[in-house]
Image 1 (spheres, rainbow, N blue to C red):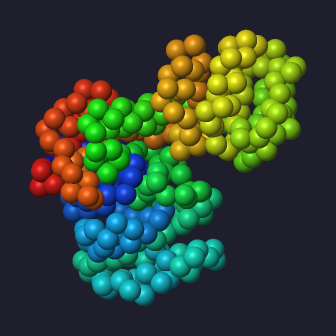
Image 2: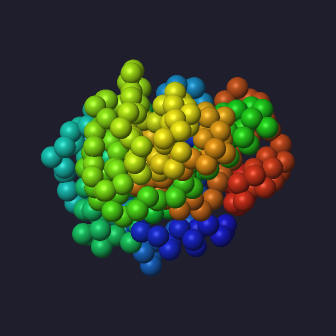
Length: 336
């Protein structure tokens, strides 16, 4: 058993995040669920998207099915709850609707297969996690993917595993570079607790905090807005982007001399849509980017095979990537 299984148990929540379809995220989730000590810990699992399909609906490739063990709790949509292949005890049916019906929470009374499709927004995901804590759940596992256009961020969890692979890029050097960039974003430091308390309720727009601690709006809907002006911001200490952070805005901040010492804050790493080049230029110029939510990245897994059949050398990929990110990297299919 790999050492990150023991490390998972140090946290109350875990997100397993695929950087692209077919990077082995579901295989990683299956590996984790098969090895957690269900006799000692109460474990609950849900998905930001849909997981457990036998065939990927986009690439038409085979996918490993999700098997829940007796005693595990789970959250899934009404549609997929009816399709379950296990005996379960119904715990709750939420008032919130998803495209597949309300989210059903249940406990597996037998080992069996399930399709997971849980909360699809950040607020509903947080509420579901809070409900699990009220049930004295020790560990909540969230299945998520950066490639999905979901408003529910995996950064709400305490810990995280990233799944990457040849589906993300079939070129070894490019794959290592792109994955390293994501790891750099995941590892961004938290902003101050005071900033978190003041800025978290602001869900859209651009804002800044001046030297006196006063909060101001930039009168712009997002960093994508045209004609964003930085006049009167010479004493700006914190610049907050409530939504997506993009290249053009980051470049404007970097080139503005009055913003040299500013701390740029975003909600979490999933809101950062900047190229590695712009990110490096900003950091090299002394720029600081901080987040209001972050997870502890405990491992990276790889799938060296792309959906088209292209295969990277597993050992070379694991070694190169581990050296670049200074974290353990595993090919779970090779480990099994």
